[in-house]
Image (tube, one colour):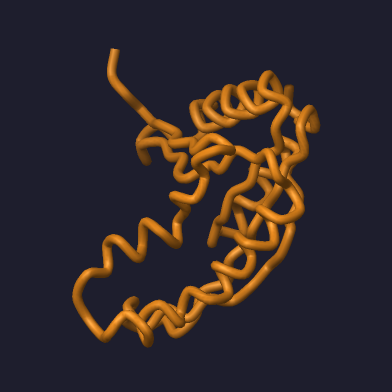
Length: 145
């Protein structure tokens, strides 16, 4: 068998390793940190607000399937498993996405948009900002299960 996809989850007690933290770790060169990290303030605010409202919450760091395997149900199986894990633990879940198409996919598992926001992305040539959606799923709220 071959691996066709994967999901990375951070449990409630360790969900500080978010997209923001990962990006900060990756950006070790470039402008001084104060100006570079200012771009992430909207994301940091959303993450703070989610953690404040949802105290016991799993964080989906990444989820993906090989391009050649998309549309075959592998992503749905990964999401279903992640949601079941959170439900067993009596936890909520949250994630961020910059894909409007994926917003609809996540909604099928009980996620709702917590906040839509713009993030400045000066490190992506030809793109000044990207729209992001922070999404939350309260425990036991999957629609596809």
